Every structure is written in structure tokens, then in C-alpha cells.
Length: 126
Image 1: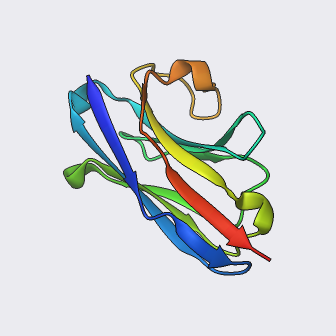
Image 2: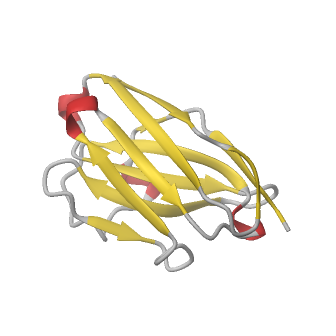
């Protein structure tokens, strides 16, 4: 089992920045990659970004490319999501997730991620 705990969400204004953190514990050695997903009110889950623990390869949704940066600290078993130039449409609950499947970083789907955190809420006001 891998336990994931997100933090860093909050209420900000459009144009502001936030950094989300996801701390992993448990059988973290089984995790190959990490992802961030979000779910806005009344909408389905949306992929945001993914990163490989080993290579550091990254992949982003088009909606956040150029504004969000995913990174990892292997020593701390922690993944970050730096979110800049936030927009009201970024409002959502953000979840991190872990997968043990070894795929090209741009080939993951939500179904590949077995372990999920409880989420942290991000609200962007206009």
C-alpha cells in the first residue's frame, strides 16, 4: 500500500500562485510514477500532470502547460505541483495518485493509478 497526503490548497485570486505537495509513505518503492488530477464541481476527473520517479520525465495537460510545473523530491518521497497564473477555471479538488505501471510518461490514464490521496481544494476567484 502507498499512502498519499496532499497539502497546499487554498483560496487565491486569479493570477496568483500556489504550490501543492503530495507526501507518499508506505511501499513507495513500488511506485513508478506520480500524477496530479483535479475534479471541478459538477465535472469529471481531469488529468493535470505526471512525473516519473526515476527519469523525471514530465507530461502536462494542454490546459495547464506553461503555467503548472510538476516536480519530485525522491529523498522526501514528495511530489509538488507549482501552479502559476491561476485562473478561475483551475478551481477544483486536486488529487495526487501513484502508479506501479511502467509506461511512457504521456501514455498514462487515470485507470493506471492505483493509489489516491484525499485531495486538497483550490479555489481561484476572479
